[in-house]
Length: 531
Image (cartoon, rainbow, N blue to C red; front, side):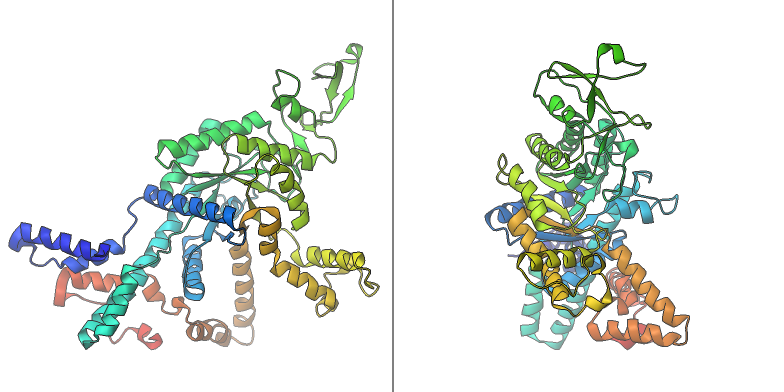
């Protein structure tokens, strides 16, 4: 017996217990409403989605071709439409997640208006967006099930038992739009206690996976900009612990922590790490700092010195009071960061790079996997990269290695449209097409995400609409490029009243008021033009 039928039977028993005062209650309507509201709290969602992520991680360990993907979203409606599209075109939400980008929260959700990705936005806007996303995903469930219930009623009315059986099977085996969200907590928005408190809010809103980076909270920069400042490992470990405690306090024992390192592009540190003995973690961190040997007589006011190999060393301090790392130590620092994070409770790694290059990523992961053979990455397929230029340059370099003639190409000018139809451009595009597959097989990338795709698609589509609508084409631009395509491609939003819940409301009115219900979906509803 299905859960749906169990609910009907349970409510029928309750109805009988309560006698005639419950005569108006239809047990099947109650079962429908319960099915449409499967998740009652954010913690239920967090547990459900954590189980999904853990299953997916295990499956990836057995077969690297089954990697996962997500797109960054900044509004509940955008996340909802992504999942509706996935179910429409790919028939299943399996291995597809959502990513909550701190960059987009800062740029699009702050009361201050657009802000740079520097943790200046209100931290409460992060759990608020998680809650909003899941509200819209749950509404997508309610809407799609409502359409199935309407089809079921129509099939029953027509006496079509085959259709009734088929639709009932779809209801019994319904796949929810609710999927895991990997949520960006930046550098923790303060000290470990602040990180713990914010992590709790995020988990209570439904987050099963929290991504945290090893930058200094009050100096945080976007991972693809300059001026990044990292913290000693002990500071970062404290914040990983804070997130784990938040998960455990709330009963999400298998919550996922994504430890991000920005060390590849970060040349600065705010602190000298505490060290007790040669070779400990603090000593390893300090060994990367750029220093100069001095004598005791050369000590100046305010100088900080460290002892290395029995010698006094003065770290090179900038006017900003920050210390700089030695050049060309980024890869070694990344490896140490990742190994240390995995030793101290992280589940997944995120290595922020300056370009999308499979072999560059793989060389670091190979070293990490010497200690942790199952180390897995979340990788940012970032719009901050010029993908066309980067991969055309990679294709150029490959052709050179193969001894091919590249005299027709200017390596520094490969972005030019004149190269679009060339063999080199086709090779580059094929590398882009297979980047995720290749990165997962070669470089241990479990999850591929694009941080800001809907930011860019919204801007592009709005530009196209505004250009035509306010130009000579007027309304034709909207009708031809938006509405007609919605109709012909089966985009649900063409019936925007239905998307907003009007039909669900009509059905509820009928549940509550019977024949006296005043419905919005009658013959004069213009949405009927899109039936």
